Image 1 (cartoon, rainbow, N blue to C red):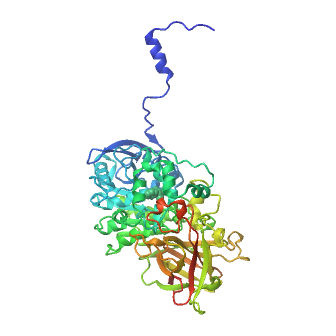
Image 2 (image 1 turned 180 degrees about the vertical axis):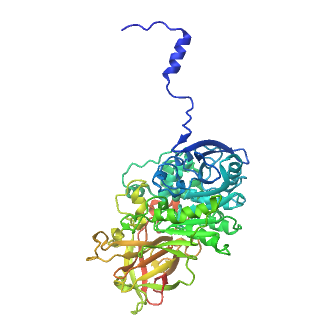
Image 3 (image 1 turned 120 degrees about the vertical axis):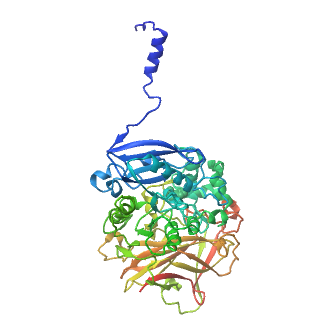
Length: 627
Ligand code: PG9
């Protein structure tokens, strides 16, 4: 080996510097797929700077700006993935992406406290002026300040701004409707998170969605959302069962360090914490100033409550029926931005999402964002009717006078029908065992899975549980005429339990004909069209838990999610009743405890559940039937 020649200090330093091949601060190329990328940290009224990426089509002049605010990393949202979040490049070339093809300036911004933005983070922060936001800012003021900056600093724009986003970003598309900036011309909240307790991400009617705990940790533990939720068992079902109560799991995972978990654990009932920030209630108190299209997915496995609820609140203010629009697609959460040809095994006749983006979303946005404001032919409500598999143009939702309530009775021997049972009092029983809860999906459940199994599960075949002894099944004869439902099915379940608390899951199902159907894949398929859970302790009051009187038949009333479905001739209508939906929902111990989050192992007991299926208190589901 030859010895290196002696070097001067300066030469050594230079060589060392050159050895490190990484730039001190990398500045990405400014132009990509014909877009010029401008990155700005925009100051808010309190001095906090929010990281913002502005993508300007090359040569743009006098064009609208379409903004998406997000806790999910604006830099990656502004990448070239297809879809609505990132409706940049790629897709434009094929003409598939209605937004890109329209040539808007796209603006992506990190909300305060996340990723590139400064400031403090709070999950879906409550609006300023409500008891749970002590600061001077919220996502409405931050959007206001951002729009104010954009209209003054983006000379390529026509100073017309729209906001669009899915889920959390859908919530962020609703908040700016509070004291909106005059340049905000349109909002498209898609699958918005509206009410975390009634039926969106955190609870459904008081039952806790414990599989969201990993999300809480990821979002809040670090600014870059990098904290890891550690699971060492491959099947979610086994892992949660072994984990005990949600509180036990939170403790082991270090979730107690995270403020939002502490709030959720402290507010298991529908108290002012949840009520004061439910966006439908918040916006009901605001004047309607900005045209809105609420986009709802009929099989939204994350935010199935929010869309219809906020539409109802806003529509009540729309005196001329020309400011508030609704889309209801046959989609899972966010599927409106992707391929809408099928919901798992259930296939529609076309790519419903592409059709909607081209024929509804694009002309809607153009009307409000383009300088010449082209006329649009968008109905107040665009609703997909499953079963018939057609889009409908409606004047309102539910369409006025279209549907009348009809009681669908649960009957002895698994019968179900629009006429009450005739044989007098009768019951159906099962044993609910918290040690062997009913799964919400077929096992094994890939741990904390966000893939297709999770996305499509609400449309999954319910035969996976209908043979269990702890799932009651009621069904009609094959229908001789179509039954069309449009609206909200209301459960009226009369039941007794040997326990002092209980969950009730009720599922309205379309059973496809078995045998010679022409569609072998779908033969006998049990397709859930409206399913939900109710935590029995809230029977008398959603805001206050009360023990259930053991062994007394009591009535539980709750709404199932909105549906717009035709049960076709030859199909059957089915209702299933069960007392767990695990591990998505934490187990009810079936012994009344003050807070189920912290139930102890000895609290979890078997209960015998007795459902009334005959006589004066016979259980039923009221369906909004279109005659
Ligand atoms: N459903 C997700 C979410 C929204 C709001 C709060 C927490 C989670 C989402 O997809 O953004």
